[in-house]
Image (cartoon, rainbow, N blue to C red; front, side, top):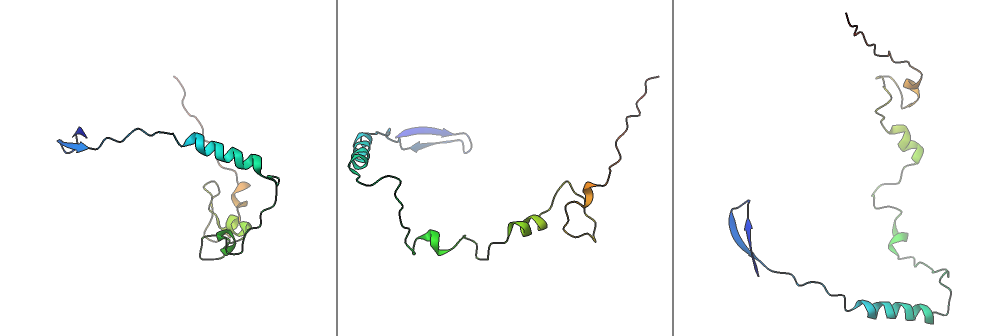
Length: 110
């Protein structure tokens, strides 16, 4: 147990001290992993069949609607760099050919 003063609530409270973590299990795990690798008869590059009930095969995404095509997403995405008018379609090249007036510096010393 340890005493800690809270500046926010301006009171003392007791906290439990956590034990430092030990890694006594680590050599055992490493030894088992390496032993399995040495004793393995097949190559590590073998093809593993994924069962049909595997979550990867249940649905292509977590969304509850179909995945749209990338070109459709690009067409409907908004850009900060292209100005659109009310009657324009979702064409991103509309504002690319328009020239913007350049700011001028009219500061002269007299």
